[in-house]
Length: 163
Image (tube, rainbow, N blue to C red):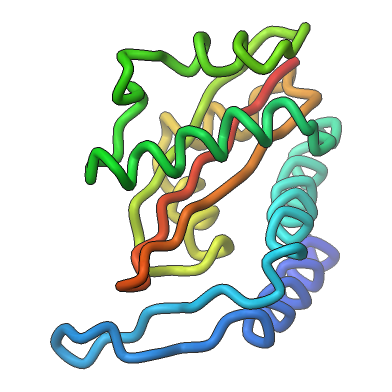
């Protein structure tokens, strides 16, 4: 358990250097502007894998096809201005993953609309039984993760797991 805490603490410290807090224009709150965007996916997969290993589950690997499906949906949720699992063209997570040519099966998709970091989003997903079940699914072997940040700072997150 101490090892997991240390890994998550290190990831959180990395996150602090990767995001710049800026006023969000609301009642004094802060939002994050993602910097070092090329590292965000790796922080997420490392953090998720630390949580999975703590439960005795195998780790997941980033997958380019699942990343593409996640990126498509993150941007599309922004266009629709609502966090939900259906694309503006009526597509489901199954449809989006199939379009990428991914040969495995989809385990599940988690989504979020937030002004918070990827690690705060992961923590929120772990608090909810339905999203935690997706993230901790023993059959998961591959992960796609992407986001779209609007000019106002709102971030649309999508994580897709496949077997």
